[in-house]
Length: 254
Image 1 (cartoon, helix red, strand yellow):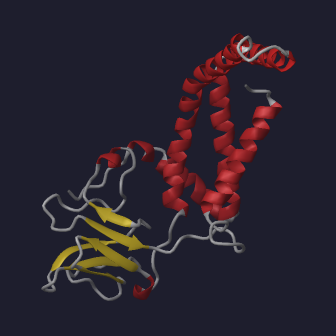
Image 2 (image 1 turned 90 degrees about the horizontal axis):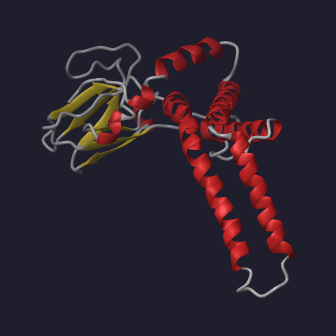
C-alpha cells in the first residue's frame, strides 16, 4: 500500500511547519525549540486550568492538609490511627480522580506537537551513501542509498533527493523510492499509522519485504555537550517542564 495520508497526530503538521519555516531565517533551531516549548506549556496549562475544577481541587487539597496534620499530631496506637490514614488516603485518591480527566485532555495538543517535532527536528537526510546503515526484515536483502545525481534504476530523477534501493539475493530490485523525508523506517502500514503516518508511504501488502531500518544521523540543535544534550528532546522538554512549573506556581494551579 503506497499512499500518503495524514495520521491523527499529523494534522497540525503543515501549520506548524509553515510557522517554523517563517522563523528559521531569524531564529536558530535551539531557539525555535525553546519557543515551541513555551507555547506547548502555555497552551497545555491554560487548557488544564479551563477544564479542571480549581475551586473543588483547592478544597480537596485543604482536606488533605488537615488529614496529614491530624495524623502527624496523633500519638495513639497504630490500630486507632487507621481512620486518619484512611482519610489521608481518601483525599489523595479523590484529588487524583478529579485531575486525571483534565490532565489527559490537556496533554492531547502536546501529542500533536511531539509528532511534528520528531519529524522536523529528529533526523537529517544523508549526504553520502556511506553515512547510512540499512537493515531489512527479513534478512537477505541488499539495501543501499543512492544520490539522485546517479540516476536511479527506474530512470526517475528527483533533484538533491537520495533514493532507497532494495535488491533481493538475485540482484532484482524489490523496492525503490525517494527518501524525501528524514524517516528512520519504511514498512507496511500498521495500526499506529492511523495516529502518526509515515511520510515515505508504505510497503505494498504483498511485498516480500516487511521492514527497512534506515539509520539516519540525528539532528543536533546544540553545538556542545554529550549526544543526548544536543538533541531536540532535551531542549524542548527542559523548556516545557520549567515553563509548566512556573505557570503552575504563578497561577497557583492545583
